[in-house]
Length: 125
Image: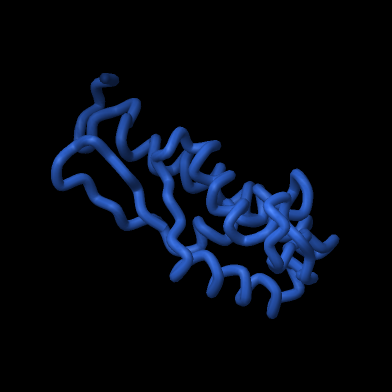
């Protein structure tokens, strides 16, 4: 998954596991085929997050092996044969765990980026 930015030299690495969480979140809204999952993530992020097939399909296989998603073959709206993925009950539980960890991580990073008190100081900022 890449982070597209208009800033030259913008860092494109994202935290490990973030793609899994985004896929699970996308499937919470209903079953989708792989290409649609990638497009949904792209659209929901205002084109900032773009998931390449080389990242998406291995992630979907990993999630399937863990029992968090199941798949079946079907037809797309364009009458193309595609594998459709659906979130399992265990996948829903995992999504809740991932969301909780994500919230904790964002809070911790925010505290480091905007500390209430400057390190080594008794003065508040």
